[in-house]
Length: 355
Figure (cartoon, one colour):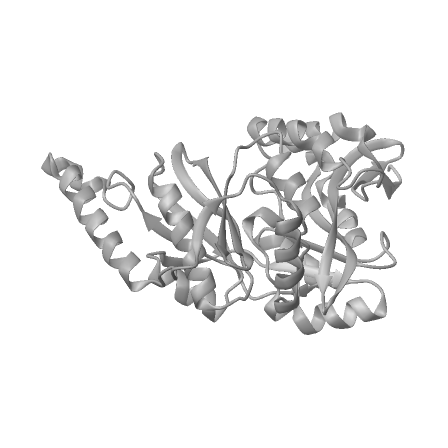
């Protein structure tokens, strides 16, 4: 019987980690992790060492499981704390029962300060709570149809020639939905963002005061996440008025079940109200509707203002998803995480759904 233990190591175990991902998920998932590996360890700021690390499960001296913990900053209760996002835990099939040791380590003996946060599957949600994590409300995903040739309308094809009519009906309905949503004032505009600079940093410093708990979206992090990513080209738009940036929205077109899907990856208005969310969703909608995406999605931890804005923007059919789990390790973080998990702000871009 081998002796099992969990240790913290660095980027040097990349090959072993990717091999474990291939055994547990798919070759495509493993390839994305391989492409993203060095990027996950890249410093956010010059001269600063990234806190990303790998937790490995050892059977004697052999790596039989691993989890990647991405070093980030967390904004929580009005202050910045060190944080780690739990990504892609994989265990060799011959040792899968011992994977509990990895999950338990995330919430018990790997940290002495800061916050660990992640989003598991239906099974691991229960384990995260069992090992001390707090849970958010269940995340929901909403959908907006762009092309008639999707699973929602594909059955009409047998009538022949109706797909064009269906597309016209969809476009007419979407025009009505846009009228229902908020409109830009004369001093406001939506423009593409080319750089996360001092102007953006000023926006973040104003916006963060209105969110009790989220991953820091300062300029250095956003540049790393969306401009330096080695696997993706993101569309980035900002809401501006005469005083500066008032919101940011990030989109991409991905492949889901062999279909092109528009995805709202990140979304942050300076104030979390229905108008701010609505203007940014409208910007994302305009960008994605011009692509070859069949439909678009947005996933988020429920909040009334975003729900209202999403419905007005034509994102319907809400489906329940996964749960965000987090734990604070020093006393102040532990108390704040427990108190604020019901209002945590956590979007697609905050974890590894893209990679």
